Image (cartoon, rainbow, N blue to C red):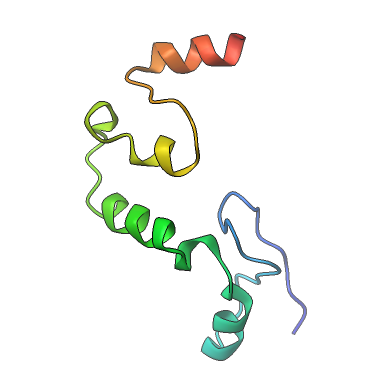
Length: 82
C-alpha cells in the first residue's frame, strides 16, 4: 500500500500517515513518540474532548504550546500584526 501523507496540522507528531491505513499495528508503530502520547498531549486531549470554547477561562492550548494567554480574537489579530 502506498501512503499518502496527510497535512501535518491534522496529524501533529505523526510521521508518514495514510488516511487509508487500517492496520492497527502499523498505525501504532507510526504514532510511536507522538506528542499526543506525552503527558502534555494526553492532558490536552482530555480537556479538548469537553472543550466549550471558553479559552479565556482555560488557556491550556496556549500553555501547552508555549504561547501567551489570549482572551479575545482581537489579541490574536494584534499578535499577527507584530
